[in-house]
Length: 281
Image 1 (cartoon, rainbow, N blue to C red):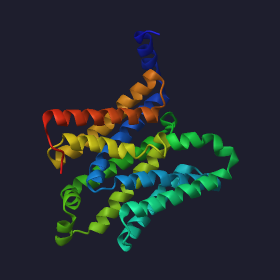
Image 2 (tube, rainbow, N blue to C red):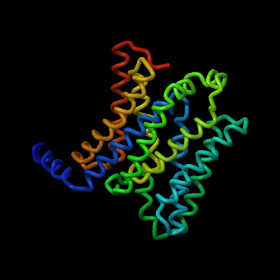
Image 3 (tube, rainbow, N blue to C red):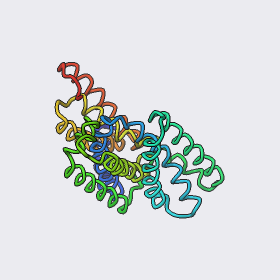
Image 4 (cartoon, rainbow, N blue to C red):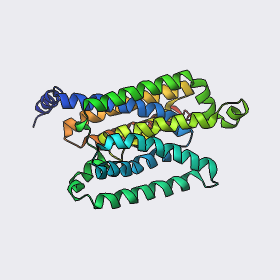
């Protein structure tokens, strides 16, 4: 097939409502993931987002067993999970990575055991693991849009506080900032992002939307404000480019977006070395 023929096919595909929903959903997820990821990386919570993604499978499996929409179960499950993790982190002497490994491994094991008893759903396990962004509906777009707006409002109104917590938590505590409350709100937003995005991206890939664009932006930024803005932009850009590559090459959409993010990250490494610029502290 010629390039012109393939581009025409892609253009016609973009005229379809399901593809338009997928593109909009990917962009909303990319924007939110990039925005939250800029704080997540510097707060060393990247493994937290990965743990949330893997543990989301337990919430989905519970929804399947109870006979209700997995999305309706996953949203409150993600919130409870995030708050419970914060509670355990504040009241144990275990390292964060060790505790998160215990929690997400146990959750994943329970989910697999539950799904093994739901024989009629075994055929859909692939979509749970890797997602299906083309299955996004209007309700998913509404949830994603509301979450993005909530994140922008919260982080915008408390930006200086969030920056202080991120860069110097002891000083934030000394100044009377309720670090625990801010941490809970932030992790709940991160949990909701994972819960909303699992349907489109899958439990194995969702953390990439939080980690990779933010990591690339960190290599290219000199200031925190620039870093947060660039991370948000790269998150949306990688989603749009990934969707286009997916349509053009007939690749799965979720993995295509993650591979695009990887390409951006590697380009950021090369560019930062060529320019001789240190990464954001």
